[in-house]
Amino acid sequence: MRQKIVAGNWKMNTLLQDGLELAKAVEELAKSKKCDAGIIIAPPYTHLAKVSEVIGEVKLAAQNCAAEESGAYTGEISPDMLISVGVEYVILGHSERRAYYNEDNDLLNKKVHLVLSKKLSPIYCCGEVLEEREQGKLFDVIKEQITVGLKGLSGDDMKNVVIAYEPVWAIGTGLTASPEQAQEMHKFIRDLLVEMFDTTVAENTTILYGGSCKPSNAEELFANPDVDGGLIGGAALKADDFIQIVNSY
Ligand code: 13P
Image (cartoon, rainbow, N blue to C red):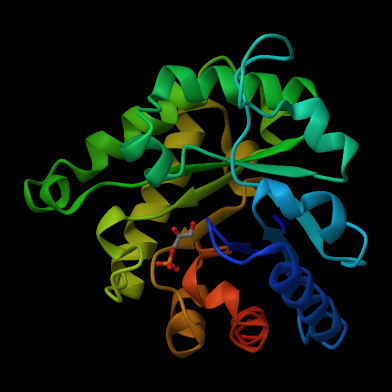
């Protein structure tokens, strides 16, 4: 069976000391979690090395990485650098990277391949903006993001890929996809994985929901058969809320 995951994306929040406190609190609370979901946190780059020393069983993710292995790319962080500080997952294609830093599906596909070649696990994000949903283009948009972003991967590669569906209109807005909307898209993505790979890959791929997920709505979202956990933004900045979401299983 596919793994359940709850991942916290801290985005550009917390200074190092606050981040360390938050990570320690998550680790402490995670010890008493009441379910078998894996827990991942994605602090800013500057915190990764220190945070990795205090999180025990909690796994570490980066929020992005370079598309190149090494060299003259000022300001970039390579997958090998991430590995050297204990990172195991890399969020790729978050809608904020797509919208503000012009990351497109082809670039993301390059990053996905690089990350996998280094034995890191990409958490590959997809999601439509409100206009696309209203115009009925949501499935086309997600199909394009997934087919291009995951192009050229093998079924074996897919064992290490996590997908996150994050409708852009629900991120940081307080608007959440209804459980039905989430399930509908997660099912669509899983069916697409059958077409692209096979049933085994589709059944074994973890698909997370993200977008204003919080303690009050996590349970009804996670109750859906194709929702395998969450990618949490704002509510991941409070250890209590974050672990409550984990315990919604
Ligand atoms: P919010 O939970 O703050 O809406 O953010 C979701 C998100 O973007 C996680 O990557």
